[in-house]
Image 1 (cartoon, chains in turn red, green):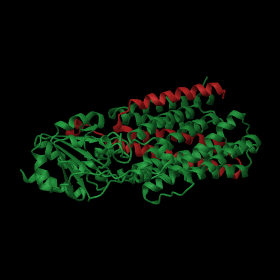
Image 2 (image 1 turned 90 degrees about the vertical axis):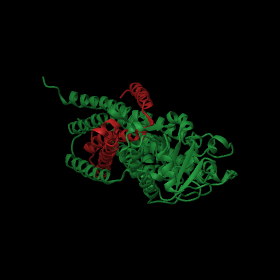
Image 3 (image 1 turned 120 degrees about the vertical axis):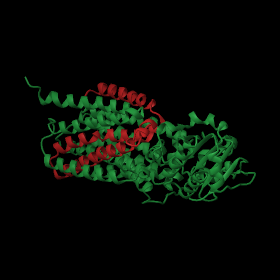
Image 4 (image 1 turned 45 degrees about the vertical axis):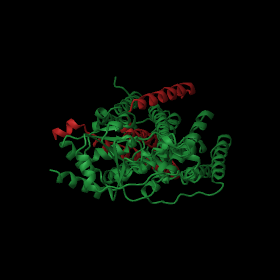
Length: 97
Length: 465
């Protein structure tokens, strides 16, 4: 990939990240950290690509580890975040139940 | 003409990137947070599925599926059974896995370069090596953080020259990275390179105490994001670059917010133990005497109050008293008492953790207020009930310039008409700083296990009819 384009993508993504989090209320900081933790679980895709290209035993073993760890990051991150968010209810909703 | 793989794969990744940002943005409100997460989940599923037809993927499909399914099953199961109080270490664990994955990807890529199957322009090689270092540090560091919070590793290692050793190890990692850059990645060199990077993560994390862990986990979360972004560049998958860097930037800001809330500059967290400040601090001479109160009297005081603010700390969560406290709150509310919860930014083990724990007990989030929103209300409050919190309500942060916590924002419970502090026993908080609040005229200590005391308060209020 062309270096400058990559640099532009990095720059815009960094601003997006900062702006998105700036509006988040403190009560959601932990779910947010967990949610962003889930999102970098996308690394599993990178793991799949390198495992798909791997030929030698070492490459396959390391590639397998990459997919395994990445998938754990994504799935665990998702479940933890969802469990936390599941608990947030407003008092209106509480009364209805 | 049917769109080919060359179109479908990038289009799916693009959609995933949009949904990730949309999902994160949804988190800015408790109302939209869940749907935001679900969209992000859909994005992840889409990205994973489409990778099976990625042009570079030529084989090992069986192994891929085995890795995906086994890791998902284990992670799913563990994330399901873990208690809410243990969530911070789970975040650390799953974050570490992401960092490890990024490091492993770099490993394969660099091996490919060695075997001549892939070539990298110098920039790409540099980015790959940096991603490898960052990912490795996030991996081993997060695992140490996990072990510490989980209680598997209680010891905090500190020895003279520790910082120097860390510096040497880190510098050696960089030197090896440069060597790889110049001479090309040979397996032996790579092994030493990764070993040193992993060691650096361990050495940096080992001396950090439990109290500072939230900041550290947040930092590693940001680092993993950056490592993932770098891998996206190396593998030429922009979705990874965007998702990784968005998380890296957001995580960096979150880390700074946390460090600020704790009044601990990031450099202090990383390069000096928490114990240090305590030793330097001359014990503040607290004047006055500590007065205690029993459960019945405290219950009467609260039952006949107009306005009560409850200030929970991690001690409440450890005693699992949040459900009892919510029961007490409901009782008081039914008597016409206006009850609110005041949360310090670092209550619990990370910002927002206490909110999650209260939410678990059923406390609606519109009863919970942040420090800035509620501090002005204490002077008009009849009873401030402090339960399992200590340093975050210590007026020394306002009054005593020599105190290590001077300048830290605190909840001004001492300004309430009455202040009741539920505490296990006499002694200082985990920072070891004397709490001036306990000596105030309007403060009464209610000693005992938080859960039992809460039960006593409930019975006390109920007895009033």
